Length: 256
Ligand SMILES: NC(=O)c1ccc[n+]([C@@H]2O[C@H](COP(=O)([O-])OP(=O)(O)OC[C@H]3O[C@@H](n4cnc5c(N)ncnc54)[C@H](OP(=O)(O)O)[C@@H]3O)[C@@H](O)[C@H]2O)c1
Image (cartoon, rainbow, N blue to C red):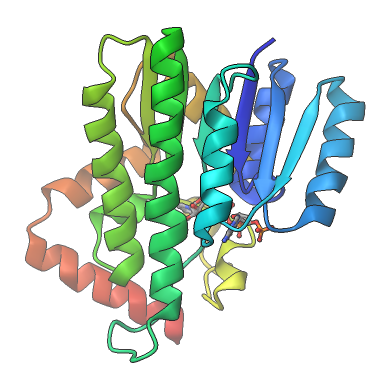
């Protein structure tokens, strides 16, 4: 039996990964800040899929919590076969603020935790000669909507770098770049997005199952659904000036 550890596995995209992996027979380790939510989801998965589910309460913006989770990942007696670095949030904040605490937290949760947890998983999996590390980035990696885009661009490039270091070890490393997915992500940050036309949204379960197929196939970058793969391709070939103009228009539309 294989085990997958998912950060932020109680709701949204993380929950969809947990469900898709539970259906494949994985045991799960779910980590987030909400112990009550973790216990509730764990109980659902145990009874629906007859798998074992461990829960770990942790705040990924707190260094000691990240270090404890890394130690759990590196514990060779209880191997983690797949790490999904999913936890994250929108950073709907000006780059001019004097109080940079939201930006700090974003770096901690979406960069430092990803670096520390992926490193722990890579070391442990390299010894065993197999495993997978799946980092949830974003399609906004190809645009320039403030610190969130910059952070997710880091996640994408970091993951590509790690895939180079892990080549030939038997460990698969992939970043998934979702487009817009209806989760708590936008409302938690006060971003107006749910009025966008249906065509732009990706079903959360399609996203998770497609990303897992891409990981199995050995892809390093995954953009689920043809429409978002096309959008990301366009984002890569647009002149930077056009990318900035598009990003400005997008940022404004979320405020109005
Ligand atoms: N939704 C989209 O349109 C979209 C698009 C592209 C990429 N993404 C990325 O997808 C990932 C998941 O987002 P989502 O849409 O599923 O959002 P969500 O529904 O708001 O879920 C976010 C998850 O992250 C966890 N989390 C947040 N801060 C945490 C912290 N400090 N420590 C531990 N866990 C924390 C939350 O758990 P607790 O609050 O219980 O701790 C929750 O489980 C994120 O990395 C996001 O950037 C989302």
